[in-house]
Length: 161
Image 1 (cartoon, one colour):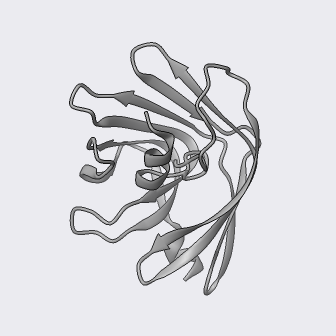
Image 2 (image 1 turned 120 degrees about the vertical axis):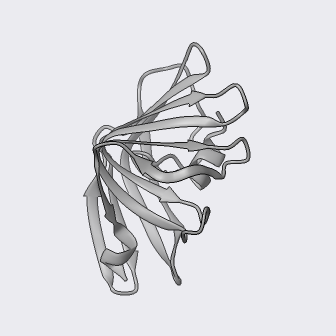
């Protein structure tokens, strides 16, 4: 999987980058997460926010075209025009490459997920807790609805607007 496209199309997982995420750390087979300290803009409806993340992030390549993205001790602050919100995003994102070039993504635990403008809804940033899933097309665009699963989803853009 292309981590850059996942970051743009999904999120920082564990920093949107589901969440995701994240900011172009190369994928390795090593299971040891490395330090990350990044800031970048994320689109919200009508404005951009700045997402800053510090902690550790690891990308683990697995057999069968699968990847795990983990963020132990990963913290993120999202700053918008109306304030800021901070999150501990230590969830796990599992990515399964599909035969058509798309990806099936499942985020468990606490994650930040950046969602592209697609399927009639605006771009946004969401904090998820529990288990949520979604599918991406080969070009990184969303297939179907935003999220499925039993997890909770909080609109971060609304919180910092």
